[in-house]
Image 1: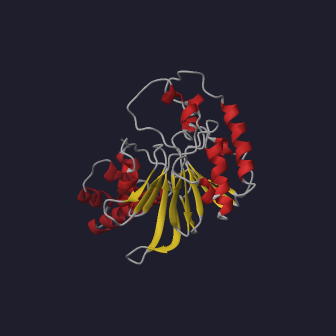
Image 2: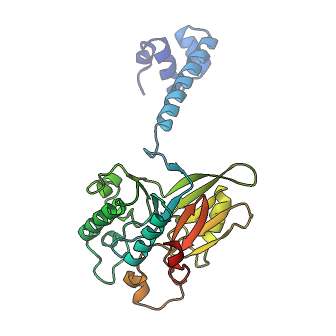
Length: 308
């Protein structure tokens, strides 16, 4: 503890603060400094308010460094789970053909563009595709997509974060995408979701907003996660991650959910091919908002000639 004489020689405000920190009562401080008790209280009140403001400023300055993307428009192609380069190129070509036929020029990738098996925390049963191959394949596919789409929005999925987590956040999304994303038409979000406000209105007169998300949760019951999220976030929801395909209305009846299976090729997903299991069968698919209304496309579900 500093010597009392040192505390008393610091100036009135500094002395009051130092003596209080040293454990003296307010009456003792007033007597030692020969000032009214009310003045001691005032000095401490001013000090605490100032410190509180400094703390609030510090806490308010701590952010994720970015904001989620809040999009608008009625016409979007919505995809997820490309798992490049384990991608179903035939389904990708159908997706672009549908976009061209309906003149939809905006594309969303709702997580898991990459696979990043090389950086998985899980042990690999066979050697994963090297990161350099994923990166170069991604550049080729993005360049090809920009031949049609005027805007591509990519949000993060759990696979997209594998490299960043492997590096313990020493790398960020600029390191992940910066090598090959140079077009101003491509927008990358650190978030795992974005919203799309359409011109449609809900029954209550509010705008119909879709939330395109790559949630943490998984269920073997098709559509369950999207169903639950729709009511939780009070919005219609488009989900990836589960590799399921479903379309329906939420339990409350207020919202719609669209679960998209993704654009991966199940035959290239190792853990589904090596062993039998009771998990829900994967069903690749993509979606489209047209006039704000949802449509789902998948092999065996879609008569392609009617949509392309």
